[in-house]
Length: 606
Image (cartoon, rainbow, N blue to C red; front, top):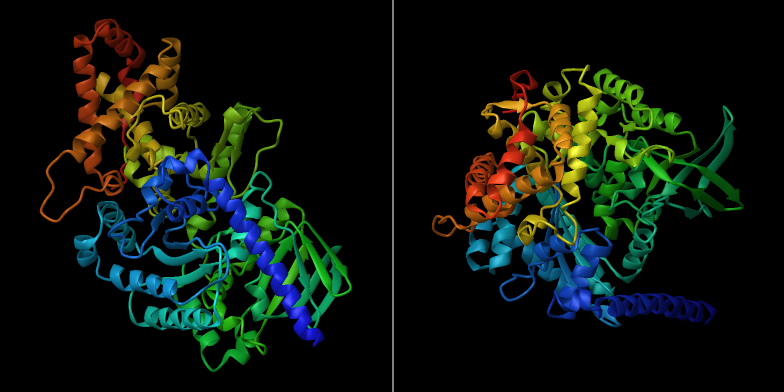
């Protein structure tokens, strides 16, 4: 009787939490901000998730949502180039109660349909057709696919059983077919947890209390460092916050590589196979760091928790969550270290990942050429700072306008010096295939490091909600990578103005000349308008039969560059016909005039 009463009390508390989450979302999506952009609560709920949990801006959100007639059970498609991940989302916004297996079957239907993209595109609505073209390009580059059912309700027991079956089916099919996919349910509890994390984004430190009751563990101090070693039940792993969104792995040298590799397939096969009891012996274990740990009885309190070795394993374990929840005899080794020092944590992250090859792009932060550029820059600009490590922050006393981040710097280099902004959208190729080209010169001038950063800062001032350049909404939806085309267009203003279309202007000489003329803002404006004109011209071109123009695919190809160059030339030629245009043209020509020695041949990245 007491157990029954306790269960009812726990259920009431859980349902109360879900109800509060529903009411919170209901209140927020009732604002004009959502009502004016989305026709019903279903779309507004998905939009709320994209905005508040995945941090998509409103233009990206509107572009991502495919819900409506002909959506084929796909409410949104989110392409994350940095994580090489596609999220296919189905939303169910309900006030209370349970969710049966029908929404899961809709997700399964979406999975079946995207295996035949050509057929799906023929029967889908226009928004979905366009996103499917972008999806096809992502699948060609082996992006992982994550099917996500987001709901404010709770799955029934039958639905949970179906979820487990779907997870196992996807695991088996990934062995046979070249299709890397997982399925996840983000219910009311998980929504609340993710929302609470999201509102702390200014200080995204994960704090977590782990119940060690019934767990075999050993607490000791080694080399002055508190250490706890535990044999944790595998089902406790999926309770750890920040696995799917990657926030748990901020100090890791790499994020999830997807489940379609030999090691992760082996982990998944063990979990769903008949050797699960030996998982503890097959696995090397998880290494987790924290800024502070405290053991009080059986409760381990962790402040600033981060997993530095085990990202692949935890993501794979989560992909089998419904099976894992039922395992009482499967364990994994966990090592918790109290390591508040950043440099020491970085070394642990690198060394503990050396059991499987760490790709070059994961360790470029320590490359001697990168460190040489960093040192020269910080010597030249004492108030500046060059961030080389993922998750690193600049000291508060530094000038934020002079803070340079390695990844953005590399993307700026390939957009400006290689004139290939279509390659700036992802880090993988930049820090692997093109790294030797981009960082061949360890004596790259600090003045140009700052100039590239400043040019990009000026560009980003125009990519704001007020949209001062009246950029096309479709262009604004590509804010993650289209600004690098804008930066490319800035450089081309100098090359075209000086009849040096095959060469590239020095970033610092270009910025100094434009600054002296007081024309930095005008050049950024011309570049942005030209990019906009190029997109609209491409969208108006006739398309082959059964083909839909995809701005996202257009901007990731070299074909868009000729359109941008042509638009810049047209803009310069049309200026004399505008009121006051002759004077503006003369100022632009003066502001972009450089000496021949201020140009060099572009760095090949083809």
